[in-house]
Image (cartoon, rainbow, N blue to C red):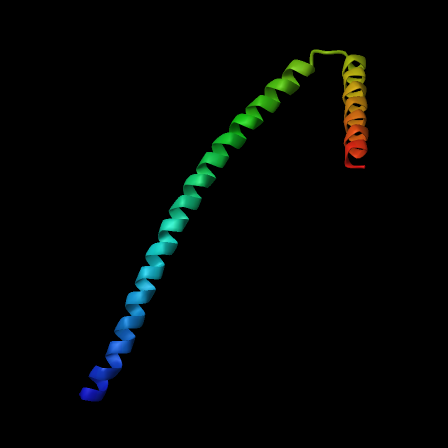
Length: 88
């Protein structure tokens, strides 16, 4: 009985440590879940904004969209050139 009793102490200690670690993991998972819900809300809003943008642009002529896209590309290339110049 003494041998069984003495071997239960380390087991009890291990179980206690495992329970503490499990509580920490549970807490971290709750934080991750909250962050994920917040991210889902942000993505939903972004999807709605993109849908609205596409709906607004669907009324435009194809040429207008092409011209605007070309201007945006030229601005991006200009920014890239400036950044390259700044970096040396």
